[in-house]
Structure formats: C-alpha cells, structure tokens
Image (cartoon, rainbow, N blue to C red; front, side, top):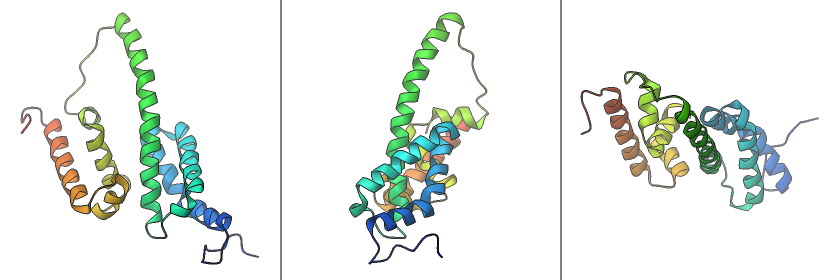
Length: 170
C-alpha cells in the first residue's frame, strides 16, 4: 500500500494537489515562517495552497512548481505584513504618547535590514533564506533573471551601505 502516488498524466486533480501539497508544504511554511513568524505561517501557507487549489490548472509542472508557490506566498505574506504594520503603527502611535523614541545601534544587522525597502529585503531573503538563484527569484518576483540578479546586487550594496553609516548613500 502506497501513501501517495506521484502526480502523473492520468492522476486526478485531487491526486496532483496532494502530491504538490505533500512535496512543497514544508518549504512554503518555512518561507512564511521566516517572514511572519511561526504563529502566522500556518494561516499564510493554508492561503497559498487554497490559491494553488483554485488555480490548479495554471500550476506549472516541476521543477517550476515551488517558485510559482513562492510567488503566491510572496503576495500572501505581503498582505499579512501590511495588516501587521497597520496594527504596529497604531500601537506605536499609542506608545509614542507615553515614551519618547530611542535610537538603536546602527551597527546591528537587524536595524540596517529593516531600513531597506521591502523590495530589497524580499530579494535578500529569497537569496539567503530560500537559497534561490536569479532564475528562480525571477519566477517569484515576476521579472527576468537578469533583473532579479541586478535587484539582488543593488539590495546587497544598499544593505552594506546601511551597515556602514559613515559611508553614506552612494
């Protein structure tokens, strides 16, 4: 008795979805967890696979399945992050009334990373956390592999500049 069959040309849509889900859920969950935290990652991954189920006919075959799922996850995570930022801004406004802001260490990676644009942070995450090459990043970002490589290069330069405040913007 086999637990799951590989999705072949004769498999049903349900079989294909099960195969995609069982193969790629850990990667999609990890993608979301690294960006949103483990608490919100399960909801984000569920939303990604809901989209995959609805658009099963548009889901590309392997090996392009995971980059396609990352592209969906990127949009799901962006929506969740926007909601989180709205909540945080409201909390920050309330806290600002009680406490004056304090300056953080410019030498820390996290503050430097947070000063980057969301686009720069995302391309750096795709390279470092997901281990994607420019071709795979291009599929996630919806651009050409060359554009993905250029975005990565520029994001790395901006992070380097943010880590070295004395150097300033170029």
